[in-house]
Image (tube, rainbow, N blue to C red; front, side, top):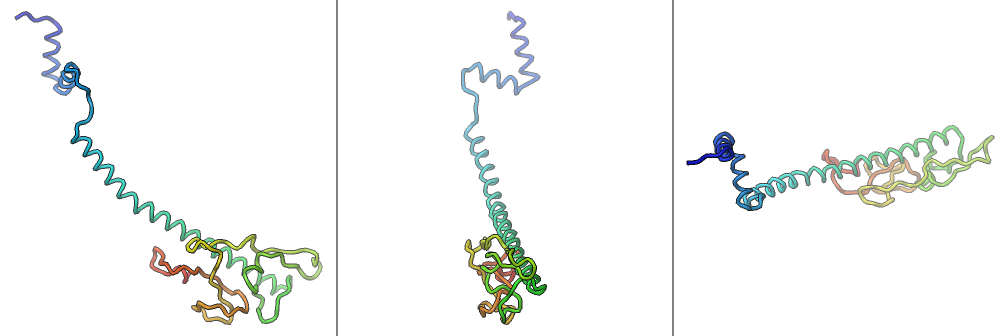
Length: 180
């Protein structure tokens, strides 16, 4: 047995580092190193599990953002109604009789309203545009007047005291969007 130095180094490497010797022997055989079928199936299964877990999270995130947008839009319209009422109570704008100082419609918040008194040549707008309801994807809001019941779904037409979404869906907290 005639041992040379390279053969003894290979034998030492095989004894001390079996994983290294496996990779060395595989590359010597000329076979391509890659993933086996079992490794590929396991990797695909892990990716499938992660994808299935992320879909409900993404759906809830989209729904949560729409709810936040609905709250924001309702807040904007209600704030504009309150500013209109304050301006009418202070006598800064003229209002029709029977409206109790509230706007006649949502369009009254958008169109320029002339001021009274010393600033009669100036106009004021309370909203730039009627916002879109993110749940129904329309600018058609449910309206309530002062004379209507607080939970009424039909508008009396005298004035706009409050707005609500016409969506019949349920929020993540279990309440109806129309009750917001």
